[in-house]
Image (tube, rainbow over all chains, first blue to last red):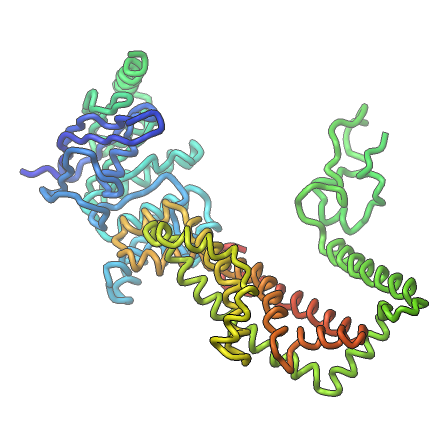
Length: 255
Length: 301
């Protein structure tokens, strides 16, 4: 079976002042349909660059990105992206933000309204449909951003440190929210984060990247089932996996 | 020791409006042993907003100051027999009334207003279209930045003789002068506004399936709208200056014509009356454009 997402020999080189910088050096990765995979790495390991290449926002220097066997040549609605923050259109209401992709797909107004209303229900923001983003809290804004990325039913949901700017309580409640959405929609999720606990708690697989130039150092399978709850965070096995990843990251940093 | 800001008499209205920053005179609980910190002050504070009553009061004070200076200048020159006397506010008011009653003022207003409307309207239209293109497309920016950077330093008034030869002495050269004198500033400032659209918003739109045309229409333009109104407001002053230059070439009617003519015949009261009209129109259009910005961008108030 073709994997949902396949990266082959991805290389990314940036021209910088002191000569070329190698950000990614031959990344190979396959993600199965319906999986939740996290990419972790120290800052500057090129993990956001990697996600941008999958999104089609950046071109790789070498290598290919295949989604369902198709070559990615640019951004498209088949890959929904949630950015770290500040990516909502500030002049559009919550409902209009969520409906943006459906407008691009030229859906009829009635159909757009129906799907936006449904998605508002999924993310629990029905009462805020007519508010502007600036009237919402940071956590609510990220829920809108996730809804906006999901409403077009993309094959892949790409999350670039989506909770990095939020406080701990909000982050934890959004973890539960994201897990519910993932299980309900059956989407394939690829998330970039530097929060190891978050990665282990949410994912089925954690991909550890080496420091610049980034390559895949290790792929850790997370043995908890899909119906896990926040209590697994206190289990010995959970802590052991966290430690293992922390050690990998630290070792890479030292070398 | 009293800091200078404390010497401003305490205003009860201010203390209510700025309650969190004005500590109560007698705090509850144990008696403090001393005071710490430098008070932010009310009138002397840096940045922040003043209560409305203060803002209006200070505004009135500023205008009163101008009138006092004017009256003083009129008094000081009253005895001069060179004929160069600053007209008093009363004389200016009388001249203004005469201008109005004779119909001269409304004819001047109509003539100047029409030139401004066409001239500045065309300038804003070109400025928005070319500016958005430059801000959105690096290729347009690369092509146009150097020539526009060069052209905007050319004094438009220098072209007057050529324009008269090409376009005659009617409205066409006047409107053209207003366009040429302001359009390059409009273009470059709108381009800056369009360049300020956050990368994330454009990335978000393209990952949601928006075409390039849709990104310009639905992301770049809406985000730039309040900035465009600001640019329009700022460059309007330059357009008024160009109007004066334009009306100097063969006009019978117009505010600048009236100023120049009354000045030439030493009718300084009439001249001052028209100058006052100029100032009032400027202030009103400034306020109107601020209001427009408030209306078009509720998300950026």
